[in-house]
Image 1 (spheres, helix red, strand yellow):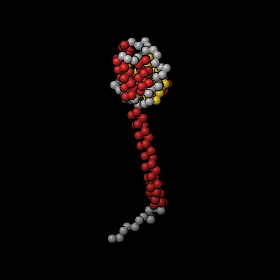
Image 2 (image 1 turned 135 degrees about the horizontal axis):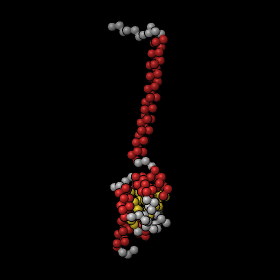
Image 3 (image 1 turned 30 degrees about the horizontal axis):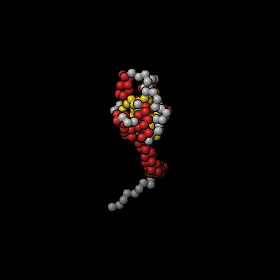
Image 4 (image 1 turned 180 degrees about the vertical axis):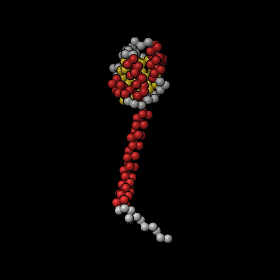
Length: 180
């Protein structure tokens, strides 16, 4: 790889792989330019979709220490470099692939871990980080309310028991007034 333009391309792909939260490998055979533009738009601002050369990507992945793409770099290949929420990019790719069966999701890498196409589909089925955090907060809040109820229940029960005893005795044993 003596050519400086290829060395620069490998360095750029390597830098993208290292700086991304996730990288999702796809085959785009049969997609039109307009469809590719729609796909890039659907990925949003936290992901970039780039057409890559297989050999240069293999070299860059090897240099970055990523082995998830081995055996997957064949045919017209593009990578979605995800800087934001990986599940949102996976959802966008999954939904686009449903509408355009020419797009094939091959593999990916998420924070250093290899992903299969099935893993990416599972990732797409996850709710967003914000929704999961809200559910966790709701579960904790419910637990706190239950704990507060358990702590106040004996006191409330005691007050009700005393009131019931007062009614049973007809109010005869009310507390005497304090003499001044």
